[in-house]
Image (cartoon, rainbow, N blue to C red):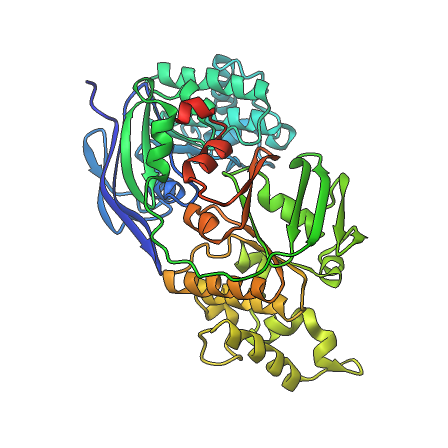
Length: 501
């Protein structure tokens, strides 16, 4: 067997409260595609950032061409022959195609200046060899996403990268463009490159990969040859852990429909979305990266405008054009990116909590700080917020406590429906238990909860019913009684029943 170009052994990486990678191993071979497979949160993105010099491992060894290497920066990774092509290309729109291809390693003349003529000619030669149909002299911003991916591949060829990481490269491409990308992958294989291909689409993996490595909960749990492995076996590797979290007992009585969504569509994100959530119910939304779950919730909350569809809340048709409209109607949204969308990091806790409820904490147009503190204290105490005081800057809180601030903020508005998008992402076990316990309290009080989650134990442990989405469509809505995790993954990944059996 040919020796691997890249070998990882014993790689570990932890963040406060989260173990992202634990003693993982990986081998990439010349002229072969290795698929890196795992659920959302399995550690794939952390591994990619470790290979590209963004993160440094806490322990372990990286070898390229048999030599131990250190990758303290992205430049060091590039110098070691490692490059990445991401779902959203990391290129510069205002520069020309040639400048993007040769950025950081442009040819120079005898005076040490950039040789623009040679750079453009060499870039054009590479693009022509790929049959890309791109003029190297035009600004990158004139190209579509698919063409930008071609430029990223050309850049990999120009720096003679030995390892090419393709991270969800087809997420924004049409079927025709995906087929063109497959041709480029074959070109890279013929050139002897070792390719790490990350995708949630099993049809792509089985079409393009030679080998696979499966990650689960930050650990490498299996590897092998694609042609020797049924899809169902890989699914079982992905989800084969016990559900070892303890979820709260729930005694809520599920009542009548509170929110009824019918035929909700968006030109680019999702189509014909219909679901209903009932009083006292937790409705789970499960899917893989790019399924469109968060985009649906943002449309329900008025952050984006759907092209069609209707929403009925407590028997009254609503059409929120902004988050303010949704909050007024009785719908609130706790976003996945709480640091960017959920809190104002320069402000104290009490101001964050009271912000959507200023009508309750002001009189004659003037804010009353005493009332702001009182409101904030009422809801943060219910969530067991850990902070030195309510005047503490929210940016200094842990991820779990920031999440509690966001939830407290919206609960103070007395909503009818609360949408929780990845409610326990990036928080420790203790904080997860607190959030889960409070979710149980919410439905016991008659609220309706919509929970978007990528964690199988959480979605199975907390949901009454589960909506499964794939590529902007609802695939099925399942009653959560004796539901197996393999069933959810099979539906989310588009794997036929007989293959997963």
